[in-house]
Every structure is written in structure tokens, then in C-alpha cells.
Image 1 (cartoon, rainbow, N blue to C red):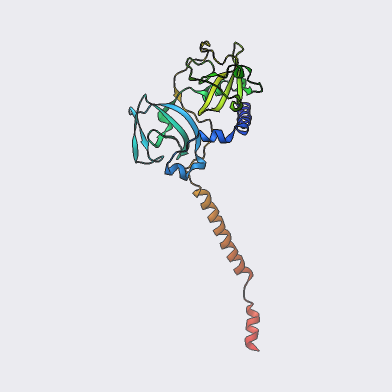
Image 2 (cartoon, rainbow, N blue to C red):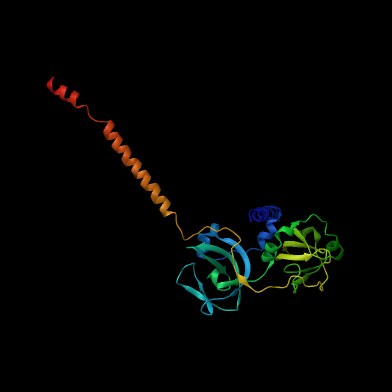
Length: 266
């Protein structure tokens, strides 16, 4: 488990360090939400789609995590896109642009996507060091949600290979090499078959499984739990130290009564 975590950390670090920041940043839109603005540093980017799966047949969308104020509801079975998540009072919450509010994450089922694929095939991913021969030859490529999917996304035409960049790659059981593209012409987090970029009939070898409960892949800071207990201990210790200092001063600094008395008799 530790080895898996270290591998993921190293791979993620390598990817993030080499992403063209200006291009990728343009594709990210931050929520226009007061709670998010106040706790931006504690929110974690998610960018994944989910099925609503509330206990009452729907999910209430809250103005803020833990708030009673509702922005609307999402019926079970509907798909919603969660931009980011946070941990508030021990519960995970996700922000949805659809209703401009927050949803409790335990009422959602995550759809299989590129994140789930990479979690399953982490040990098979490697940094790409090729030269995009087939992409340059065709100047076009098909985008897939992940290698082996039964559905394709769309086709890129007239690709400018100077702006084409693959962060890491995967080789399937038939020897086809796939490349992960973080950002391309407004599209994020897609896979392209580098060996056969225009083949629409690649056999399905990783069909979409059923949606599953979401498990956070990133550590969160609990916004709803303050540091009051710790601060209280510090304040008590400081107060105790201050009180002790006063006692010590009073013990050590006593008027010399004998000298004062002597002066009176002079």
C-alpha cells in the first residue's frame, strides 16, 4: 500500500511539474461561491461526474456545507458534475455548478473515469518519451475516456503537434500504446491511442463498470473542526505559566522587613 502511494505521488508530481500551466489553467473555472472563496485553500479539485443516489430518492443541494439553506434538489439517477470537494465536520461535500451549491458526497455514486482507470492500472503507467509519429502523420486523433472503453468521445482534426503533449502512457495487452493528455483544445483528461490514433474499432477490453461509492483519493483538511481545543490548552498553559511567574516573583521578591524595621529605630 505504501509502495503504491509513493508511486502515485512520484507520477503525479512528474505530471504536474511538466503541465503547460497557462494552457491548463484556462480550462479550470472556479466556483463563484462564498463558502468556496473563504475556504479555497482547503478545497480539493475533483472534476468528476456522479450519479445521484439519495436515501429519499433525491439529494438536497445546500448553499454551504452543513447549511439548512437549499439551492434545489437532484433526483436519483441524474448525473451531476462535481468540481471540487471539501471535508466539513467529518463529512465530504462536493460543489456542483448545476445548482451552484454543495452536495454531501456519501449520497453520490462516482462514474468510472480516467481517475478510476489510473487507480486500477497505476503500476502499468509510465512517463511518455516517444515522438508522436502516428499523430504527426495523421494530424488527427480520436479521444477516448480511457483505454479499452466501449465509447469514444470525439475526433480532433488538424492537430498542431507543437501544442500536443502526453504526460504518461499505458500499453494494453495487444501492444497498443495509449497516451494521457491533460489538456488539448479545451478538452481535459483524455486518452489517445498513440499507436492507432484514428481507429474507431479498437476492441473493447475495459467496459464501463457500475457506479460505485466515492472514496477520496486526496487528503482533505476538515474545515468544520477548529483548533479551539489546542488553543485552549495553549492559553491554559500560558496562563498557568504567567500565574506561576507571579508566585515566584512574590516568593523571591519580599520586602526586607528587618531592614525596614531598623530604619524605623534609627
